[in-house]
Image 1: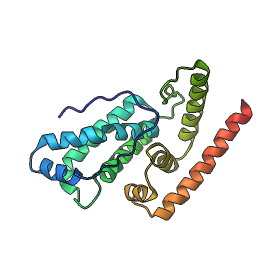
Image 2: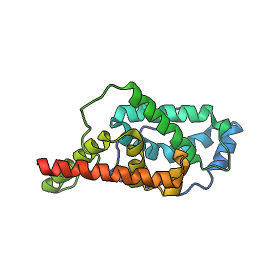
Image 3: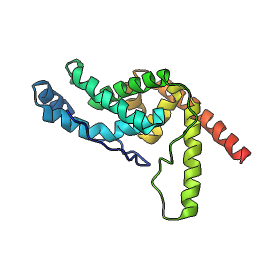
Length: 196
């Protein structure tokens, strides 16, 4: 089944608020209705792409990860428990695919252009670009676990409860990792300011 191409990331990512109906779409897909699964792809493509992009820092790799995520989800759809949130289930698949790619990848130095939408004022655009590059560099310096909690909380806007469900760890551990990650980011960004 062809997946939609949505190549242009936006700056902030709206959280997928409406989970109602996902279980019904899964049930229909399991009964052979491919259009129902395509609706799930359309609903979650952008948020999964943006999460993968923040994890792997490469547009092409992020697109590949999302493609593999949906293929694996389709193949394993029978394992989905209808009482679960579909988003948490599929996001976990995307997260593991991102980690698999990062483990296979050799370290890189190159960074993508700014992930924020451009502004009309050139000075503001320059400042936003500098900040975006600094944040991207700082994010890539974090461990995979710490980077993930920052992406889930600050770029996708998920609650601690949702993060706990996706990561399959206690909420207390989520908060602890996020505290550590924020502190590390603060140090990295402060070091950047001190050297500029």
